[in-house]
Length: 75
Image 1 (cartoon, rainbow, N blue to C red):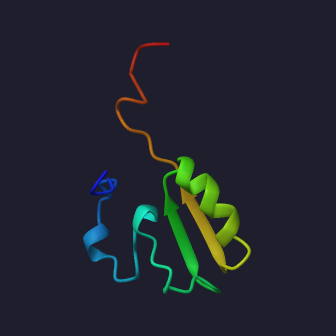
Image 2 (spheres, one colour):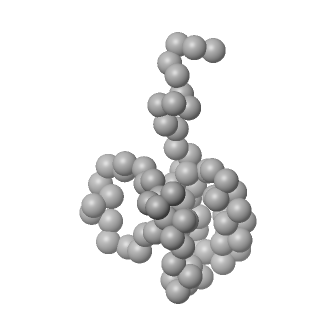
């Protein structure tokens, strides 16, 4: 993978804070005391969320579903 996929999030272009994909983690950005949102609950999130949670002021986690994970009408 040369480029990490990012979810299409309405309004993301208006976000003025720091953002980065877990595959390109910004180790110089200190999350201590910050309000952090994580979009996605995949293998990477399962690893880093428990590591950052004790340091951040507030942590919001948003689960994403892609069409291939969610097939309508089939059970």
